[in-house]
Length: 192
Ligand code: HEC
Ligand code: HEC
Ligand code: HEC
Ligand code: HEC
Ligand code: HEC
Image (cartoon, rainbow, N blue to C red):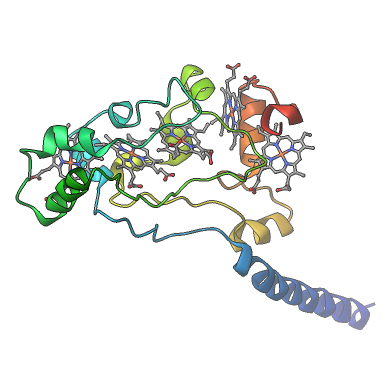
């Protein structure tokens, strides 16, 4: 025995390391995790608006309860406060320029499911699922960041035979909650 087992263990170890290295190279390019968040045309902070000043999420994202989209507030809605509030600040002057040009602010999109997936906000908001359930503690974020897609950490934990919670926006994530809340898990619910 003795020696044979040692060799086997050594080989298994080497194989595991090789697999992990391979996974690193395979998963890095497809990982969609974006820890820093995109750079936005105006330094808008949820921490100030939704955190410090407790403005309701749906005051700005008012389509969430009645449509597919949550919606991004118009410049006019922002200026409802900012004609006066902080009007002398450079970032607010930029905002006023968009209003002057009658152009929407070209905000960079953060959350996105692939084209072949059907998602709608309305049934979730009506079903009592909170924004934070899916988007995290947005009211504490200066920059909204989506930690989505495959990650090396998850791949390794999976490989070790444990099953970590699936990352947001993956199919496993949607299906896990649908199963827990007894919502539909039929393929055609999310794939038309
Ligand atoms: C004063 C208006 C305002 C309030 C209040 C507000 N938001 Fe936003 N939200 C915005 C704007 C403007 C953007 C686009 C810029 C950005 O991504 O930060 C945005 C972006 C987002 C995004 C990213 C959208 C994307 O591109 O995928 C999420 C998610 C979000 N908000 C959730 C929330 C939640 C949850 C709350 C409440 C805790 C909230 N928001 C409150 C104005 C607001
Ligand atoms: C209900 C009122 C309200 C609305 C609506 C609102 N804001 Fe604000 N905003 C505030 C308040 C209050 C502050 C904090 C001002 C201060 O600290 O002097 C602030 C601060 C800011 C600042 C930081 C200004 C600075 O440099 O000190 C930016 C940028 C900003 N808001 C952008 C926006 C944008 C973009 C929108 C629309 C998506 C928006 N705000 C909608 C109330 C509002
Ligand atoms: C069940 C999970 C879930 C809940 C609950 C949820 N969202 Fe979303 N949200 C998503 C997904 C998934 C996307 C990407 C949708 C797409 O690509 O079509 C998204 C996209 C967005 C966007 C950008 C695109 C758009 O729809 O305008 C904003 C803004 C947003 N959510 C805000 C909110 C706010 C505010 C709430 C609470 C009122 C909320 N979300 C609740 C999952 C959720
Ligand atoms: C945190 C929990 C949660 C997550 C995450 C979640 N959902 Fe849901 N979903 C629900 C609940 C609850 C309902 C409402 C069920 C009801 O009203 O009977 C629902 C309903 C739906 C419906 C409408 C179903 C119908 O029968 O009309 C669709 C479509 C849907 N979800 C798609 C998605 C997709 C796509 C994702 C992932 C991108 C997702 N959901 C993530 C909890 C969730
Ligand atoms: C509750 C929503 C939901 C349900 C139910 C659902 N899917 Fe998906 N599916 C998704 C989402 C979201 C993605 C995108 C995953 C990503 O981008 O990582 C996806 C991706 C896929 C893909 C692309 C490959 C992959 O895994 O990313 C296939 C194939 C697929 N689904 C098949 C199915 C089949 C077959 C069923 C029924 C047994 C089903 N789906 C049920 C939400 C769902």
